[in-house]
Image (cartoon, rainbow, N blue to C red; front, side):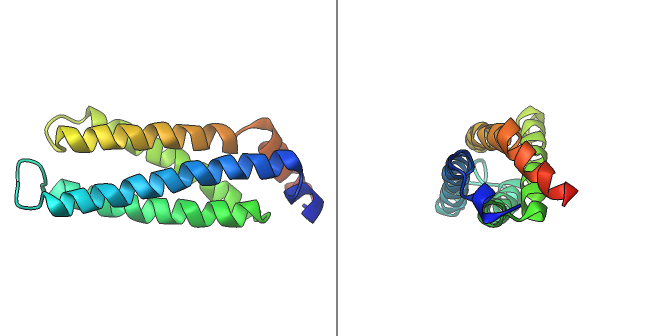
Length: 140
């Protein structure tokens, strides 16, 4: 991959969109952890599962942001990791929403929003332009 590929208008636009979506995911995740802290004295709203999941989501959002930054600079490994983490997190979110009783409604609603944001990331990162661009780097 050359710097021209990374600076192509379609590539720049795709990664700008991904960066915005991932930033929203990170922001939402941090706000959720802050809400859990604020509601910590209400065990019906914040249980151990909320703390564990909230912490893991913030960590995955930070990793996703780092992968986005590196992939935008042309890192094939970061691109692949971004594709994987977006898909894995969407699958985990579906499970969390479907499992009865473990998570309070507010956490499931927040996870649904995260899932929608990550679905946008997955759609762009798996789009034809980026797949073609990063597939070309495999051949070199």
